[in-house]
Length: 430
Length: 147
Image 1 (spheres, rainbow over the protein chains, first blue to last red):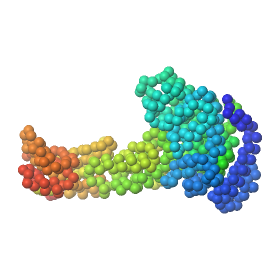
Image 2: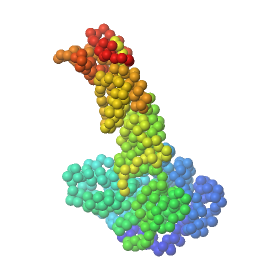
Image 3: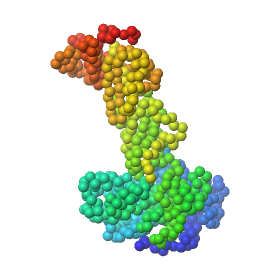
């Protein structure tokens, strides 16, 4: 089944023609309306008319998350403020978020992409989708919500957490489809198990969409087996609308990236050179249909590869692998993006904390921050240490939005770190 | 009353930590009179009453331990039922809050002392000045060559 069949099975040649046409429009729109891009182009002596082919786009500058941050809040906007209807933000490394704007048309197009994903995975109007992603500034829940409404399914805007209520909603309204993070799916499974519930008998579940954080094929298998459902991979990022950028079809062999809306390139994260199909590299995306905020050659920092060959489902949009890694130091825990610098900033603002710390990623929903205490401020009182640990925990939570376990250490316990990479210990296995 | 200081050392809850600390004390010929370990999931504070606290403090500090030194009260307990009650009744009457307490026993002299760690030591000493309490005195209770 297809939502927009003509475009989903379009021939490669026609798709590339469409991409080039839309790329030219996007470049002109960015050059005309976004001073940041105009400056960038003139520095590189490029004019919109120089973009005569898809290959020529490699002359265009790469856009980084730093560029978005520096242009916060309105700098990247290509339309007037009257024309935008929605704002989302995405966390940044240095406190300031990235602002992502949607025009009415953008909201509608993002919803169409989600609708394609849902129909592609067998959703029908009589399905019930329980949306367990976070509603609010994150794109995850709202973009899915609009797409699902567009298809005509019943959407339960449950948001994350309150697991007992989630279970009650799933039973009372016969939920068939879940949208959630892999870590929450695992947690939900453990709660059901402890309550003596059998998801295969006591529920009506058929499928789940898992996104926002990396997870392994083994985790997918585990979740599928426990719930007795099909699990589909979902890829997206706020800068590119949120979910619905790439999505698995029923073949479950890579995620179709909607190439009529985005041009994808895989580059070497070090040199910036474009890599051939089938090689691992950083995914770079260019929006083709975005009205409020066109973004050219955006460095996603996600390491993926393009899966060569045609998909049995008939869709011609190429597929990307699941996220293999990151080309920066961003950490994803419980679907939340965290940069080690955020943690460092919090720690260095607390007097009783010494210079050295370590971030240990225990699992996809548990992080430990190990902190050396200051020798000079130690007064022998356990109470003060407990207070210190609570203070660190709370301050971290308000900065990174999740609760980390905090361990206090003696000065000199941790290895002296030369680069920030050694400060992060990743115990998770994909 | 003679000044008595307690040594507190911050430590992760890990096997071998106490061994490392006590090795330093042994090498310096410091005699441990009492020990107390308080832990709070993951870390602990180890406290000692020793005969040569200044020396012990300096040496532990030199060896890189996270250590602090603070004065405590050491109140003699009479060895009979009600001994601790009598002392705590006085502390209670004077509204002295106990942050932490443990017992020091001198086997040789058949004497026990309640080590009391309080928030404001000077005030506590003042308040207890005229009470019928006997305090630990290193000069009297412990033989030592140097302090």
